[in-house]
Amino acid sequence: MRVTILYFAWVREAVGVAEEILDLPDTAHTPLDIIAYLRTHSAGHAAAFADTSRLRCAVDQTIIALECEIGDAREIAFFPPVTGG
Amino acid sequence: MITVRIQTDDFNSGAELALIEDGVGAVSSFTGIVRGQGGLISLTLEHYPAMTEQVLAALADEAATRWSLAHVTLIHRVGPLYPSDRIVFVATASAHRAAALESCAFLIDSLKTDAPFWKKESFADGRETWVDARESDAHAADRWR
Image (spheres, rainbow over the protein chains, first blue to last red):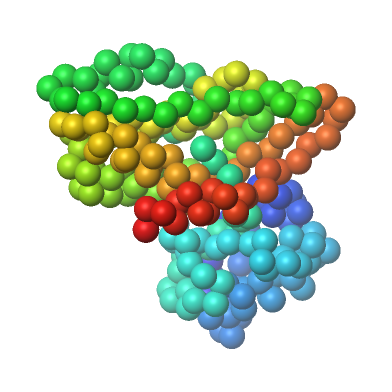
């Protein structure tokens, strides 16, 4: 499945890009599956995705838990807990 | 009327309040200001543009329904900001004070935990650090659920 992956804040800095288009393996059903896959891409990805407790995920602009099914997602974003306001 | 804006420019709190005073009994507002403690030189606000506006509009809708508000205004600045700059503005207008005050608190508490903004701090000694989310903010938002 081809998806756009977005990164924000220190996740973006660690990965080194803000956005990439990837073909996910058929075995990737949840954000946790995608995280496991992304960790193998580069040292930067491995650093960004080392600690899942510091990561949040939005699928098509809606926040979901890391263990939830992503369905037919088109845009998947990974970022730290938000700190606006 | 619901107004949601994400912008790099400053805003005029007084002018924003005047816009929602007509025909209501109570207007309440919250303005967040950049604190300059600990040698902070600047703050950079990053956000997820495609999601931010949706989240803020949904929170404004929820508040308008829950407290029967006549008006909601949410403004959040992004980009580089400096100590004493205005960063966020929430204003609510309703017939009575309790609805205006409570909905204003709900909106700023919920915005802090739900809206995809991230702050990076730059200090006088050259350090740059991403601000960590605070447990107390999560508790503040939880009281409205």
